[in-house]
Amino acid sequence: MVKERGVLKIIAGKPVIEGDGVHLKRVFGFGEQPEFDPFLLLDDFRSTNPTDYERGFPWHPHRGIETISYVLRGTVEHGDSLGNHGVIGRGDVQWMTAGSGIIHQEMPKGDQEGVMGGFQLWANLPASHKMMKPRYRDLKGSDIPVITTDKGVQVRVICGEVEGTSGPLRDIVIDPEYLDVSLPRDSEFVHPTKPGHTVFAYLIEGRGVFAGRKNPFVVNGSLVLFDNGDRMTASTEEEPVRFLLVSGKPIGEPVVWSGPIVMNTREELETAFREFRDGTFIK
Image 1 (cartoon, rainbow, N blue to C red):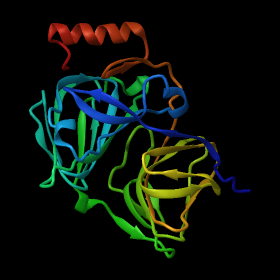
Image 2 (image 1 turned 90 degrees about the horizontal axis):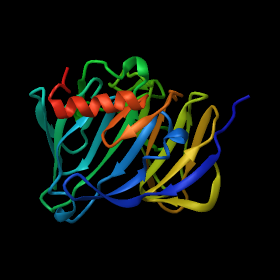
Image 3 (image 1 turned 30 degrees about the vertical axis):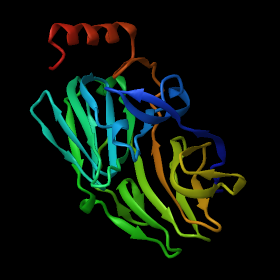
């Protein structure tokens, strides 16, 4: 018998300041990891005010995690200690595996109207992959398949599968799914999910109904965390809705976390910061 996922909780992001004074909305983060495992953090850096984001995220280290950046408006210029550099543009995705360690910077730039729009998700790595070789998966928006269901629902398949169409990002440790889903008014989206995986939806436009729960409607800037099951449902009434649907296989290991570095033990964390200070961080 198919079990539909219910709504475990609904949360709204909170304003925080990160980097060199970037104002953003933290949807979940430090201290909430157990219920979002394998995900660590989700930041929403949409803004119409350049002073909120223009100072960016200067050089900083990462180890033991993956960062997933998805840009809807504007661009993010990036560079790293390995000599990589480039621009993440409108509709693009960068899936960066920090692994054993990388030092990089990310500098948001608004579009011609000064609008910046995007999201960054952090995913944990299991102990067996904490020190894997760093890598990038850069995905242009034009390479992301878009399908339209018979109910008029449009889905950008970044990774995972929808109605036989698979996203181009594969072979990722936590077996994730990352979809950008747009529902027109008076429509429904039913999507199978892997039992045991953590699944959440983050609304980025309009308001919607999840698992048939209308009180309250879920609105732009709110996240729905689902309980366990074989599928999730979303629907709309008088207005359309757009949301990011994310899932991944929980790791279930100890998390010792400080700033941009996430390890399994205090000793590993102290080693990482000592190596950063000593100049031996990059392997």
